[in-house]
Amino acid sequence: MGKPAEVSRRVPGVFEESASGDPLLAVVDLHAYYGKSHILQGVNFEVHAGEIVSLLGRNGVGRSTTIKAIM
Image 1 (tube, rainbow, N blue to C red):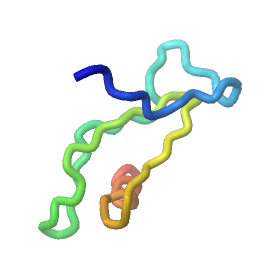
Image 2 (image 1 turned 90 degrees about the horizontal axis):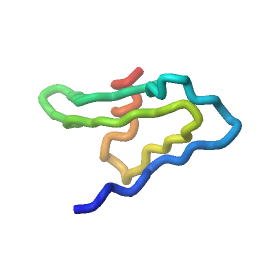
Image 3 (image 1 turned 60 degrees about the horizontal axis):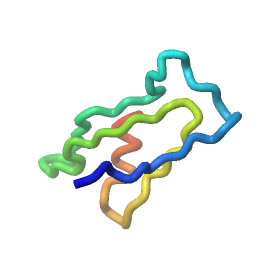
């Protein structure tokens, strides 16, 4: 398998990236439950300065749950 496709793009001039290149938000191995139902299973992603990120998916795949778990 080759390198995965890039899923985010940096927007020039919107934000300046920090000198260290560290992400503004790093989500590692996120799991979430509603009762006994395991809704999110090992979600990982990073958001860097200057990136615009979108979370896409059909109904019931965990978009809102991902945001609620991060908040």
